[in-house]
Image 1 (cartoon, rainbow, N blue to C red):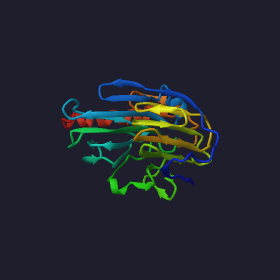
Image 2: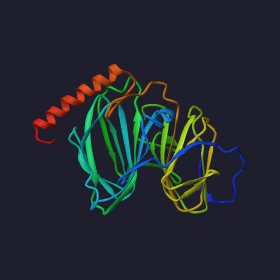
Image 3: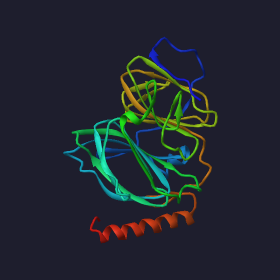
Image 4: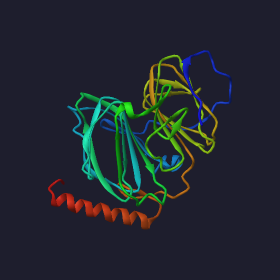
Amino acid sequence: MTAAHARQSPTPIATRPRTIVRRTRGNRHGPVTRLMSPGDLGQLLKPFVFLDLFDMDTASFPGFGLHPHSGIATVTYLFEGSVRYEDTTGATGVLPAGGVEWFKAAHGAWHGGGPGDSGHSRGFQLWLALPPDEELGQVENVYLAPDSVARDGPARVLVGTHGTARSSLKAPASMNYLAVRLRAGEFWRYQPALDHTVGWVALSTGRLLVPESVEAGELAIFESSADAIDFHADADTEFVLGSAAPHAHDLVLGRHSVHSSLAMLRAGEQQLSEIQRRLQNEGRL
């Protein structure tokens, strides 16, 4: 489906660059920078509806307590450090750098976490809007160790497929979500699937030329197209990118939920309220 590689330049065969149509540095809240929300850029990039870049240490940020979600799946990936996690299915543990947390909240679940057993942690958390036939389905949680994450060249395939690599996570729609490391001077080409006209990139560190410069802390949105994207690392760079077929459904928002209709939202929020009462009875809230 895709063909990509990383190498030291020379310049690749010339193609028309994908134009960047929007870019943002988001809104910072302590160690977390919100680059995309369902009420703003998520409307343009759905099924990708929410993206946080976190850069935190144990001393200054204790983490997030248990909190609810429904109608979405979250994908957490670390470039550095570790984070602890827990959820209302009973899962607990520590996710190390290079590992993936997949938490499909669907009809409703609570989860939480914070810095793990390292002094510093840096990575991204992404929300995916689920299609109507899955948004009230069963909760699914998968925690992948680094050596279980598929890899093709410099790219780790968190969701979807790339080159010869396929994620073990079941994508809710036609999409790819990759984490990539490039050294200064390297070139890498990403070829999306034919139906992947939604595309974006967000940098944790470094600087890319695409050919416009995109720097650490930025989210850049590409024009609607399935054309290849050429990435030139102007410095050692770590980034995530997403491509997908457009999500053809409305985003109906609750405080912690994203659904395709008001009826679905109400059903998800009812389930979250029932879980909340149970957690309160158990003394966990």
